[in-house]
Length: 398
Image (cartoon, rainbow, N blue to C red; front, top):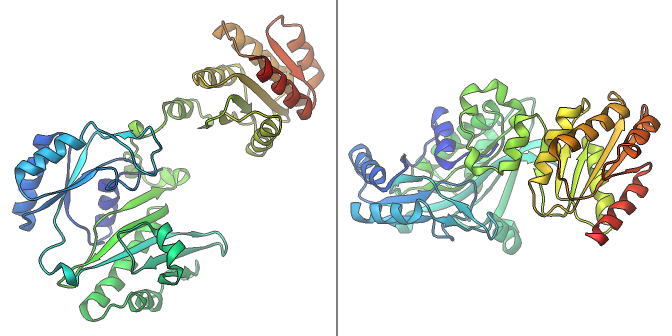
C-alpha cells in the first residue's frame, strides 16, 4: 500500500528519524496558516509547497514550488490544489491533487556546503536479503545515476538474523564521505530508517533527498514508503493511511468483494481462479492476438455472487471486447461455477460482449452441458487453446 509523503514522514518521526517539518493543508487558506505555524515553530522564512499524490517526479510536473512569503504560499497552493498533475510516474492522464504539504525551508544560507544523498531500503531479490541502497547523487532520478554513473551507487545487504549492524551503518556514512557530527548523525539516521522498515512492515522506503545541512544535520527532506498490505492487520493505525482517491475505482470495488483484481490496458477481460492459472490465461490471450484487460483471481471458492461481482467489474471497463472465464474445478465444482455464470448473466442482463467459458476439473462435463443448454450468448471450451481460439474469433467479429 502506497502512502503520501506527509504520512511517510509521520512514520519516520514515530521512530525518531529526523525530517524536514511540514503541515498538511487542504485549502490555500490552510496552507498560509501552516506556513505561519512553521515559522513560529522553526523560524523558517521560506516554505516548500508540495503536492500530495502517490507518484514521484512531482517537481518536474509543477507540483513542488518554493515560496518566499505568505502571498506566494497562497498562490502556489491555489495553483497546485485541484490541478491534474502529470509526472513520469502517473502516465499521460495524471492525478488530481487534493492537498499539499507545506514544509519548512531546510536549504538555509551556506547552500554550497549542503549535500543531497539518495537512500532507499528494499528487498534484494537476487540475495533474498533486505538491502540499503545509497548514493551521493541525491535529488535526482536514481535510474539516471545508475545508467550514467553506476559506480556512485552503493549497496549494503543485511543479514536477517542480526539486522543492520553498527559496522554497516558506519560504512554507509564513510562511503558517503561524511565526517564528524554529520558522520554520527548519518549512523543514527540509517539505523532509525531500517527500524522503520522492519517494525512497520514496509516493502520499500525511499528518501530522495536525504539532506546534510550546513550545520551537519541529517534530514529526510522527501519520503516515499510502501507498506506490505498483507501485514496491515498488525498495524491498525497504518490502515488509516489508505487513500481511496489515489486508487483505481475498479480495484477499490473489487476489494469490497475480496477479489484480487488489477486493471490493465487490454481488450479481453479475464476471470480465473488461482494466480498461476491467471498468468497462464493472460499469456494465452496475448498469443491469440488479444491483450488482457485485467488480472482477476476469484479464488478457490467462486460462487454465483462472486462471479456476478466479477462480471460487473470487468464490464465497467469500456475497452473490454470479450470475456474469458477460465476455472479449474478442484475445491469448487465446475457445475456450480457454470450455474453461477448463468445466474450472473441473467441478473446483469444486456451483456453485449461475447463470453467464453472454459471449465476443467470436477464435474466439467456437467458444466459444459449447462452452458450449452442455457440459451445464453455464452461459448464453452474444453482446452485452453480452444478457448484462446474462440477469443480470437470473438475479437475478429467485434
